[in-house]
Length: 236
Ligand SMILES: [Zn+2]
Image 1 (tube, rainbow, N blue to C red):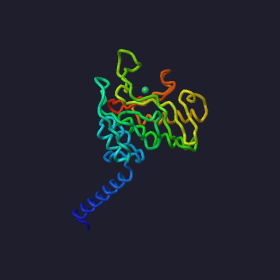
Image 2 (cartoon, rainbow, N blue to C red):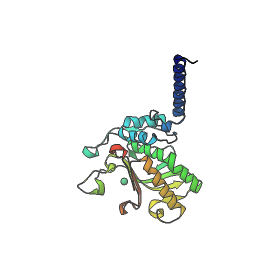
Image 3 (cartoon, rainbow, N blue to C red):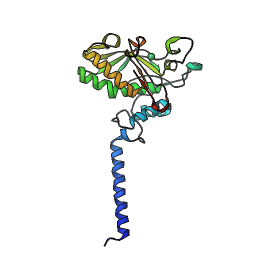
Image 4 (cartoon, rainbow, N blue to C red):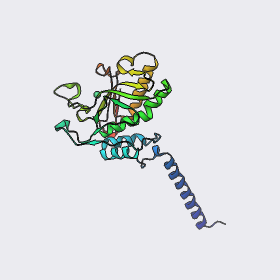
């Protein structure tokens, strides 16, 4: 007859095995492990959105993401005054595509969002639809010391601190160019590509505004990393 001691030992052994199995599983699925630092190669899991949100909240966490992911870290000294003070300022250099114009300054969260979006959204859709990766992202700018809408009152734009970027077109390795203004509407593959990458950007940025939102965004996708309570995001 099994003693109470034997049953307790067996239960402890089973618990230890279960614990090891859980640890192994978390090790193999970092996207579902909230304690594993985010890296670019991570397959997205249920913890990924929270980890991406943490990059927006803390520049140090964001820089750690660049380092763990083997991405270049090109910080610049702070610049600007008041609402346009840019403490987190860097040259954006992407591994998988070139920005055009090339020299763009933005926050770490914008750089990280672009890297994540390219790796997990843009390139797979470009390969699936065209069989060719994106090599250039044409943009309309990152930093602009202004309020939303450009008036004298109201909230400051995320562009005021370089925490946003306006993407106007995508150039593929095969030379094809897909432009937001020209190709957004219609039932072709260019429109399908643009809508798909807009939708995916909603997971990498906290604000995504497309031509579907209003006429002011007819020629670009506005992507920014505004910090909002409880990971709340805007995707339109
Ligand atoms: Zn914008």
